[in-house]
Length: 379
Ligand SMILES: *Cc1c(COP(=O)(O)O)cnc(C)c1O
Image 1 (cartoon, rainbow, N blue to C red):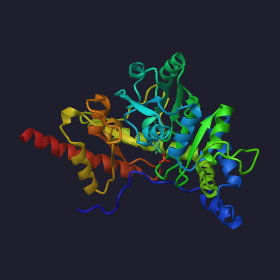
Image 2: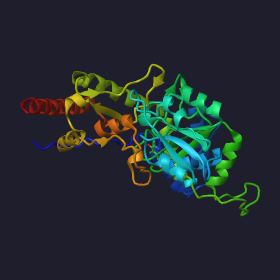
Image 3: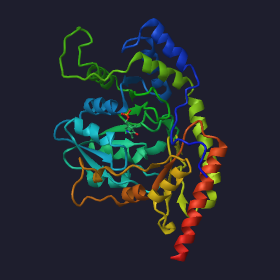
Image 4: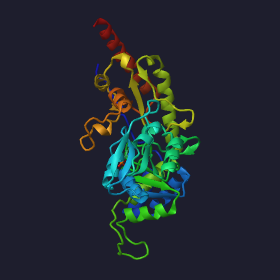
């Protein structure tokens, strides 16, 4: 039987003041990178993250780039990044002329393993990028302790973790600076967009210079440095402000869906490992990655293809960056990340999912797993 509808893996929720604020931009003709929504969005986002400043950008990758530059990453430096992340985290390091040095994940939350950081530090190491992967905060205390001891910067890549908490503190406020993405599949979206949060006024000033072509704020059309055009538009900020007004609702919807998954997938405990939430964490559930247990002998690719036939869109867990052509080095291995990538599947996660959707997804997963188990026993 052909499924009648498709369940997308991600979907934006635009049920607040988005249309009204965007129309206001059009009606007032403030459609470019000046206008009231930019300041309002930055102010409100800084408050949301409990930081003093927030600097808007045209996407999360450019946010990473200017944050790394402002923190001092440059030619010849090394920056520690997890191998299991989206490629922007490493690319932004490369844009600065620095080299990303990859560290494996810890198996519980898939995040940068603090115990492996010390072994990756060299005299060239300048900083650490901690990614809050899939919305679960990285274990920041040990990461920041190593950084303090070795005089390194800590940058959070919080592109997937709007609203997550680490020991009661908001992601975005835990290191020297933090970056966010507002791409269409993120927890809140501006279409394309990004933000850097920091409480360091000097960093903020530096990043405003970098994202605005390097123009001297006190002398128009005087450029003391090479900058970039990484500005957000007023239309994007209008979307962002409307999204941020609803952020508690967006966050709660994801918690609800995660709760449904936990219940519906409980019978598949022998087959799947569900996302773990550390006692010190509030998970933002950008995504819902499940990991097939090796003893299930189910291949992630085959299962994703079967789910696709059921109208269920899924994503593989990120492919570790040390295996990608720009970063590949013979003999480099990170077994935890490689295992998670080979066996992980991100299930649909967004605010439009219903309990029926989740039950349907769990039902199809159970069915495919049972078929697989039978096939295995016949082998
Ligand atoms: C989405 C994402 C980015 C990049 O954000 P863009 O807005 O797409 O440039 C960076 N890091 C991580 C971990 C992401 O998930």
